[in-house]
Length: 384
Length: 127
Image 1 (tube, rainbow over the protein chains, first blue to last red):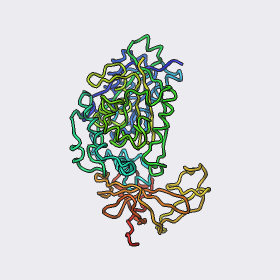
Image 2 (cartoon, rainbow over the protein chains, first blue to last red):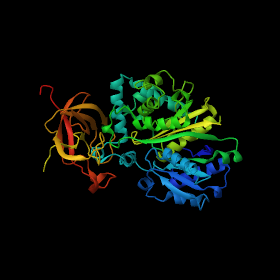
Image 3 (cartoon, rainbow over the protein chains, first blue to last red):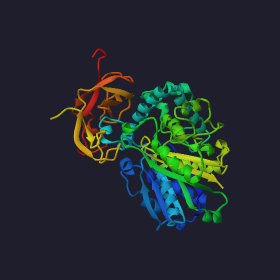
Image 4 (cartoon, rainbow over the protein chains, first blue to last red):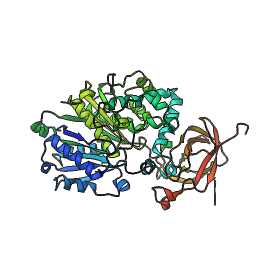
């Protein structure tokens, strides 16, 4: 089978995009990607739009139809993909499937979310509607899951509170060199540890911000890519998996089984091991999540991810740089855009076009998480 | 009206909270058999204090995952803590509340789920 190539990537400025609504953001990223890939919109067969909650945030539905019309891609087939925070990764999987099945020769994936016009508490409530009724009635939110699991992780593994803070410090440092990032500001451990408590033991700076933004990828069979450009990367492994909807029902709440299971599929398909990965973009919606993923993806042993952060192994110049883009923590987390923006970063890392953020990489991995590990997509990309 | 904390069993005896179409442990169906946890001791597995809760939720909102062992089977639940502080390993018992959260001030439609349920209070160490 022809491998599947990414021939173009783009993202909008992430941040508070006052006056830009969901369709404006999607259109901006889509046009940027069409331009980057040098593709005629009329040659696009399918368009996938990753978005969690435009209806809830903005009272707007049918946004995929609006986008295809706006960018001159009619009559391309389109659909919207919602897999909560993992909508972007799920969009990559759908776009990949569209080409792998032979139904599309050119697929555009656009992920985006418009969030900052509403209050933090309302946005948190919209996101927490993904919880089970027995969780929702208690006011359980995604940040409170992060608090519960952090408390347990620190207790079980005798991990240092500072290691969680160091994830935020590292990702903020990386974000300084990302012109698209929401925050481009260095912080230190003291900044994190003196910020207000949000969900004990986690504080404000352990959490990603609420952000507007969009990102896009153009995908096609490798044989087509070769006719268009020398600068493309290939998706060599992809896998998705689901964990319990109810978080407290997990056998071990500090283990993200869907990360293990989705990555197992992706590693197998790519014929790679965790040791082969040169750079990774992980879903650091909360600092604890980056550490849990780094263990469950097999980069570090269970209970030792926090030590790796303290030892600098995940720094830009470490053995396995994680979140060179700044991660969700500093880049921002416009829900549907995040999984797509992860691969935007890896596309540039593999093509040696990541500027100051550049690391030496031939194999890259993205892990996009919905809920608190409820739905996960792992994607492995390689340079040609 | 029964205000007890009742947990259902599947036909093979696994405790399921909440219930599902199939038991998450063994994929068998739910039975009519139940266990009443109201008078039993649970153990706090982990906890957090949510200081920025969403609309209609008490603030601060101390939450815990609590585990019960009943007849060789274990089951975990999530719920609020009634005390001002809590720690891992604390023993707790359930306390009924007719309204855990104000459904007039949240995103989810009031009629689609229950809003009553149980929080937990820490048992005195002397008990």
